[in-house]
Length: 290
Length: 135
Image (cartoon, rainbow over all chains, first blue to last red; front, top):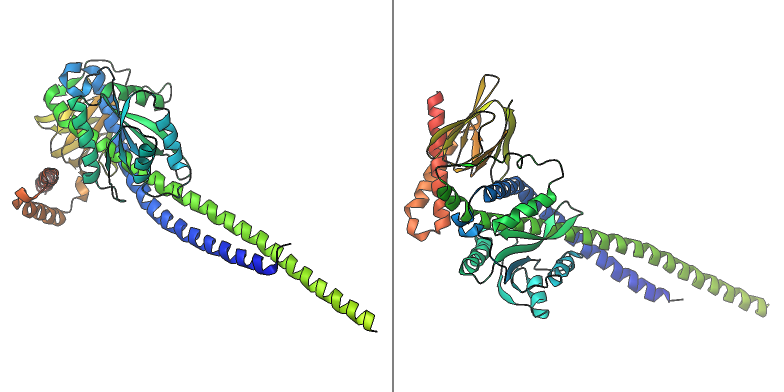
């Protein structure tokens, strides 16, 4: 049996760990609240915009705008959104799993240090990585999306897709590949999420009227669409990150508490054993002296 | 037959109700929507949006954006939106003044920022316009 001194030392170290994880949990919890608020507040707007565009993309000619043209896919353009820091459970590992499933030629763009490291380690074609602050300002995400749009228009990549942890709720984050361009793939993507039988928009297949004109509406709406969608996705990823971290830290804290209980019990047992031993020795000594 | 009117801004879903008719301020003038309207996608300018339900008309002010009409659903994607009763003229005037001051140094600003500020000014003008008309 381990000596009481060893056990005491372990108890002390576990206590320290618990204190640290508890502090990290609290920090993550407060960041999570803010990030979730921002992500959920913007979600209806982004969802509606995606729906509008999906409907539009089926009502008009492909040639009306380069974003609508479905080219033969030679190179996929994939934006990988991960976290800058670790200690957030299986969040990043789940995203990497999706990356390894990409078998076709693809060019990668990265937001988040963990993703950049992973892409470099697995020797994938990484074109650029972008730094985005914890608050996820629109201006910083826009740099990334604009760059990808430029590559898309130049023909360096034939799709724009995003791999990110979609925020569902505090306990559930779902790693998904989300298509952004061309717009045709968007409709298919949205159909996956729609429950069967709720095709409210699809049954209205009359020709869409544009006001003032198709080109003007598209020119105003489309450039804005990519930036906004990617920003919303980044916000969702940030909310996922903080949620995952909080849950991971809470688990770590609970584990530490449990371990502490076990160790304390073991310590008390060892102490009691030592005392009993001593009494026995004293008694034996007295007995033999008498 | 009635319409479902939904107004959403980047911050939140501002309005979601069943109404009888809607009048949308598009960039080319007002468009009235009744149930059964043909599918429409329109560019919305800053201005006043009217929704009528059971003879009672509600007034809202929207910033620029887009409107989509499909079947019984009218969706408005607006940069900003506010109900007429909630307009605070003083706050709006202050905000407009700040935006205009910032715009004086246009060259130093990021184009996206200029666009945002100009949108804010247009939205402010529309709010004040609507408020004054109702007095």
